[in-house]
Length: 155
Image 1: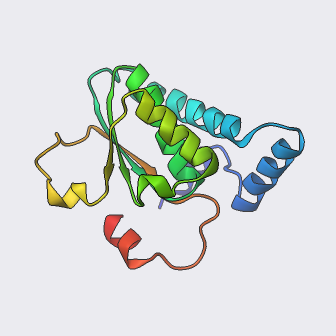
Image 2 (image 1 turned 90 degrees about the vertical axis):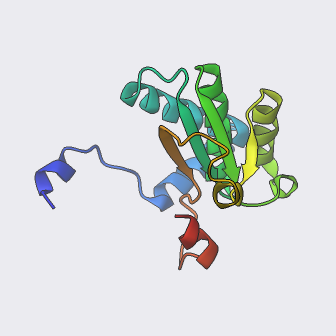
């Protein structure tokens, strides 16, 4: 792979750095819900820069069980507000999500964002138009080890 291409990218924080920043933010009294809101807003800005005309675009968001899933749920709300057609595909029953992830899930649902189990991707492949954009909210900085078979199949 061309090293010049990689060197042009800004450096990304390592997982332990992100986790440290989250701990420090909590020590300052910044609520996890606000951190997740800020992450979704930043992701929305990046997506908008890459795709300035989001209105009418079909966007599928894959929602894992952790905070990355909550980021996806929150981002779906921003996309809906921009006129896109987001659909969130969740990997666990909705009632199993907790804390700030559950908060953003409930908020997005209250705003009209549809949530479907990931099984809907294979059970009824023709029910939804194919997406223009696919957002990965499956795994975050806390992931380690081997992918489970269900996650591997989904990816």
